[in-house]
Image 1 (cartoon, rainbow, N blue to C red):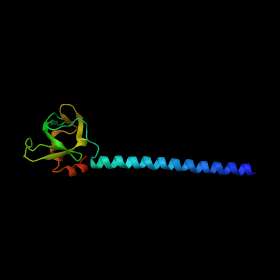
Image 2: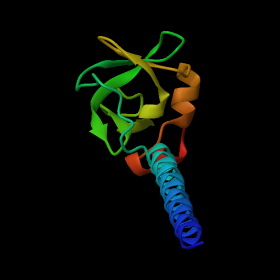
Image 3: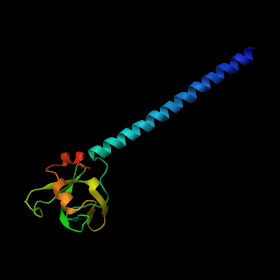
Image 4: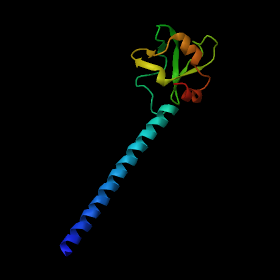
Amino acid sequence: MAETLKDKVADAGQAVADAAKAAGHNIAGRAESAVEWVREKVGVGNEPQGISEHMDVIASCGTKVGVVDHLEGGAIKLTKNDSPDQVHHYIPTSWVARVDKHVHLNKNSSAVRNGWKADASSCASAG
């Protein structure tokens, strides 16, 4: 009988350890998902590779919509010299379809001009 009770206690202990391990993995997975969600909404960590200063920015329709000044807070700051109104405009990096010798966007020029922002922080809500 003592052996049976000892086995039951060991089995119960193992069940508790397994449940704690599973709960820990579940929490870690949800925390990772939360971090990714925040990065997506804020634009942190979403900078496409290969974007550099002075690259042309091309809309999906083939129209040049600006030139990269620099990356700032999850957004591309466009130079004011190439702007129709001579001010800086910002577009979210989430609009980038691909980067080669140019930055190619997944929006047409009209959508880009209607959606660009006056500052980088405004781009967080403009996915």
